Length: 358
Length: 272
View 1 (cartoon, each protein chain N blue to C red):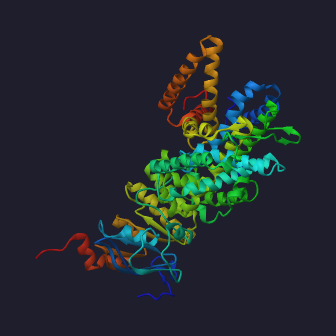
View 2: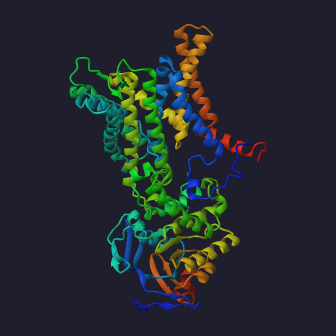
View 3: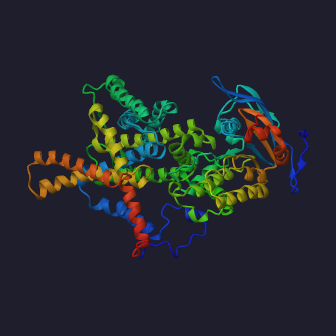
């Protein structure tokens, strides 16, 4: 009854263009924001932060990044893991090379560096499409991981070959390193996730987003109405790389603290993020969040139910968890191939008409 | 022949200006196949110019040459008094040549509004960073161009489907949305590739009305390909007739109708 467009008249194009045109949606959004910034930090503990919130927030950024490239611009990429590694190593080199500069700036710069690398690996997209492009980005994945293993300059010649995040503070509060309080790490990531989502939304609702989607839907028509395919594709690679790089930097510096590149940023990471956007919904910012939530929260939830509630042995639960998550993914994709975002859209459309069926 | 600088007045009293685009001795080959052979014609400011001909005559190839999709092996394209060098299609579009397609080429995943807004690409210039911030230049530009796009949407009577994804629309409406997208670019020449293909009589009448109104209201120069002879003869000011890649006629609809070569191409030659 309250989910209505009726009576909510838009009198300017600015009003009509806003992200949440329906009043109820808008308030819901403010409530979620308020809860995320002002309530959650006070009640979370170490377990919640490390098992749920940090991976969710960071994967959401990575998923937004990949969604820009694959969901909006239609360029399939299997190099996400490699590009996250670029962000992580860029961040490490910046943190150790310029310790006096704020970590905040380091992470943004890591995004910028990853964007540049991403553009270079995006160059083949001008010639090849679809599966073939996926294979080309796969090459990026393997090359980058090999590079960070092989060239010891990247890990400052440490004997273990690992990179470790030194402690860095913002306003005197540690956000990386062992002394970090759970709420500080959470808030630090939340700010980046929030900003990423807003920027991604702005990019995709304007002319840039239209150019990307035009290339995705019909590249020849896009070119004939005046979209420069070179610029459009490379700008998508750059924007995508920026977000993926930030996700990689946060993943290393705030979440894990220590990284061995082959283990953390391998091909499985690329697939994980790709599954997130497929399950969440291609071409949707909300879908990026939904997909990240699905793949991060579901295993945690299952583990808690199986081990905590039902009292099963941990090893059995761990294996069953894989099977259940896998089965759920298949069921989801059969029921709604366009992902959780589409389910959400359908639900909203129904709500708008409720209690009438049509 | 008409002088390049001077125009003429049509039967219904519209003033037609000087030459906007001139094709000079265009020859286009695909391997051994000659799609267009030594064709010259011009398009004048404000006129409705039709290209007709039987199937496989090379009409669409000609349109593709104009929109920069094909590059002719011989001949020159002159646009606004200058020789146009070989260009990419998007560069041609930025010069103010918009077109629609024989098989609709809309962006199916986007709403009608977004499709039409994409047509404003030439007018919207804010960069990546301005758009990332949104507030300020990007938003201002969006609103200004939205106002123009809304005029086009009004004009073509597609207000009710503004926010509908194009993939869900029926054929006739899609054709109209495609015309809206091309118009949104404020083109100096609008190329229409079979705008009435696959339509019923009523839809054809609607579309003809829109074509005439566009020409009348915005003064847009229009070049169109069409198979329906009745429509072509009624709409256009001058007609180029092609057959097997050659030009066999050029003139007002009445002149073309009386041309023996054209009659032969369409009706066949009597064997006596």
